[in-house]
Picture 1: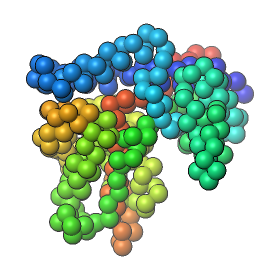
Picture 2: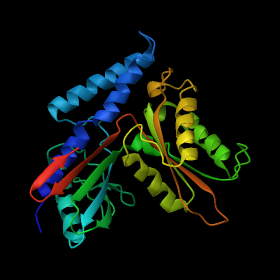
Picture 3: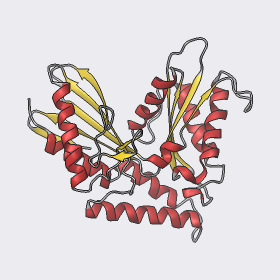
Length: 291
């Protein structure tokens, strides 16, 4: 089996230091919606200058390099154990090169491992097997702690918000999560929302949906409509970039539906900050393509 440690290291470098084109494009469009001379516009202009400098210097976009979340779509016959070993080795090297800040802290003993490895769960690696003739695809998202802190999970009905077990109720609780986040989530953010599932699987799916490109809509027309509506309504709350007020609080909304037990109706919101760091690499034979 091919050793892809160096290629995965490059994936980490690109993810940490260079925003994807669709995210940067959305941020640049957002600048034009803010009033010249306003704090909101100034915040976005500073963000974009930071994006340019980070890319040019191969330095992290944000001092919080986040929780590394890998999704590995591997062809039948590949060893997931060896792939995970290569990912972990690449993460250690990325930390040495300062592409990643040492982030893995033992919660019991409050000790930082110093190399971004922590037990079997840090970094987070998810595997999915594909047909033997398909390419290997590794996707990486770096999920910052500030935006992770303002994620939320609701159990419907929520009488406090008047939210029932329907899409109208989903709308109410998602907007409540955005309102509560204020500037602490490093707006403008992107919302990943899962409807249904259990408490654990729902949060996983709410992050998984964030791997899709900006502007792509759910194939279910009801959910696609809700995605558009939530983005629009969140931007009327006046929170704005970094909580300074303005027109741009949410850049996009992604929703996925899950089956659930009759007794439960969870709505889980994963908030992604403006540093929407996600990249992928595709390996076909000897060729490696980064996106």
